[in-house]
Image (tube, rainbow, N blue to C red; front, side):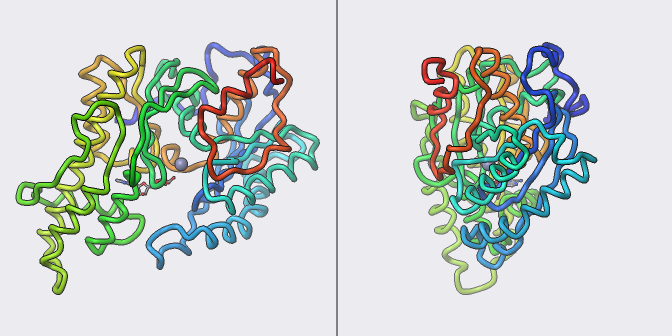
Length: 378
Ligand code: KG4
Ligand code: ZN
């Protein structure tokens, strides 16, 4: 279920312009993986323009190639910033701040995004906000209009994408606690690898989901690693190996479609079971959670969404998954995280954020984000 009935970007009821230092639109850049995305948000979160360029150069390689990604970001981004401004009908001078995903992610793309963002910020004399990509996923549910009634802290975030698989207690802006994460593959990575074994294209998640619809999972039982174990860590590599073993007898001939479909359905069920079990444990670890939020590309999976919705309902909690384009990597979430950060610092009486000196970083643990709200360090 996608809880997104009101128009996106409706003004947040509790906040007025007087309470926020964000008085002009924010331009945001996302280039941490294989999507070159740019967005402009009004101070209240209204999306004024949004552009996304999905890179196709990786398709022949069956996965993201960092060097190809960095070059494609470099080729696309300057023009894309211009087009996004044009789409919003704004001159660059109308911007109040510039933000970019500055980590974690692939370092080449991060350098391009942060470099373009910083250059624009310096040229305009506006602040630059370095945004943690995971934090941006975590705060997306709070984009005004997305979750009916808003997404008050604290809530549980399940982030399941090609690169990430973790449960995070979102306790406030800058206040995140990782409850558990994958000890091997990310969920999306498992989908992509199984898709490859089944002879499907990349990215594999949507193709596996489509094939699973016509399959009977019963003849193809698969394991559920870590199911029922304490905590909420994830593991998918044993599941992937088990799929490879089921497929081994077909190595030398064509894979019959009913076999492929049955294995796809069984694999998808196993992932949904594993994730639902891990999230149930995460909710046990976070008894004060008011909401369950799923984000990341794998949260697009219908079977998984249905399981998470049922789980939340059984706990008396609402479940929210942002619409697909805001679930996968996008720049709107980066702009919104920047707005939340600027507001939160302002509310604490801290000086406006200015991250020109902050270097892009491939790893940027979420627990380091609290430092930007530490008054003694300001
Ligand atoms: O969040 P995302 O767009 O990019 C990052 O990895 O950061 O997620 C992409 C991942 C890919 O692994 C893709 O196969 C998976 O999300 N995915 C899905 C579905 N749609 C995308 N996995 C399962 N079912 C889907 N419908
Ligand atoms: Zn992401």
